Image (cartoon, rainbow, N blue to C red; front, side, top):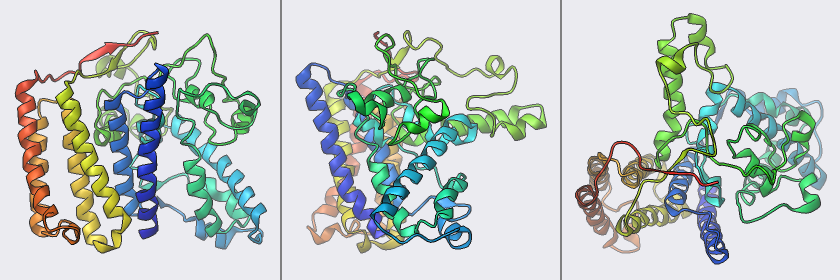
Length: 425
């Protein structure tokens, strides 16, 4: 747990620097591809992922270590070549796991959040699920286990493989010549995030694009077809917590309302987006049919709301980075309480960004929860070691955030449905 926390305490500031750098480059080039409210939403998703990681969540039905111990045909001596083989095997496994998440209804819920942004930038890479508690695709690790790849090797290669996928989430880099035939590039991954019919469910590879080429899912980015980002059932929210549940809730509702027992049972394993016959008319959901003529989610905001949204984000961000740097100080009970604090703060802050009419109420609930946490731990997660003023300053901040939320509810005309803008070709 402490090792994971250390990794996130270092990685989170690096991500922030990369996001800000991409925005600056885009601004200087006159091509800003990082709308800031959307980037904040993506970054909040990264924060919830960090909290999930603290619990070591990600249970496999059968662990890799078990398969390694009982199924390995041979045990390879750990050398640099083994690490290379492990990287390739892991990349092959990722391709199929990724592809299945796109093709099976209940697995899509775990992956939807990574695609729901209607923008495409480094921040988008931070949109990761925190509901992926159980690894149903454990069998994809079988090739590595059969080859006798040590669990230690996998543990080292896994984060390297994961972080190697960040750099190509950008529109600021064009095609890369001969590299387009070897590795996954920004151009190829832009295709993967697009909702254009020709691009849907293409380019699932993570590092080497050979898997897409071998299994028929490769698609080049065409000059004549600019990618349009997002999902065909748009989320219309900046709240990463509700996004994590939206597809699951739809599946539960459809399974409950289905008249045929076979539909109730099989809806989970059908192709992504499948619904029982007649449900699209009887229980319609918003769906984009023309990717070049739809309205992007972009609630209007004032400079004051943008400023306050940044204050809220950076308060949570730097506080969490500090805690992650030495998470052993608070221990497991403290981590559970920290998770509650972060999640209620993320929920209330992003609903204010959404201009939700209930945002002040969410902020009040968040403040009450935070006050309860404070009176349970007046050291405020050990921050009084730095200064005795920090815990009471947080109390003041919690009061201020609720007052500010109510002020915004009076200043702006809060609306139930999102204010949207038409996408431009």
